[in-house]
Length: 124
Image 1: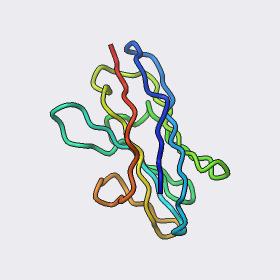
Image 2: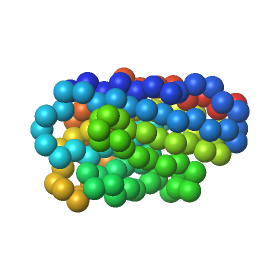
Image 3: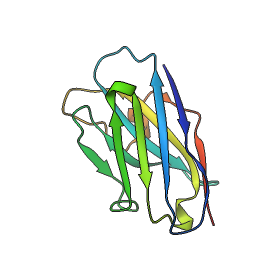
């Protein structure tokens, strides 16, 4: 399984970015996906998650500003980030794993076994 994130970069506070994560080689069945982030000196934290039927969940710190979505035909996960704040700066990772239809895996990192290498988001 390979996950490749893209779309990170530098943006001013209040700006927007759209992250993408292309998934390939996943053949285990129904999948759930999520975005995590990790800032220097901090633990990895869940940002947003989506289940196989499009149900979503968000960290309270990003709810209302970030939107997670997926395009199954392209096996791509997205994270639209609006109204970015200084504290949103971090390395962003996407993750995927097997889940039951209609049930998400939530925002716990240990629930996911497949991870991308990350894409850096800088906010100034």
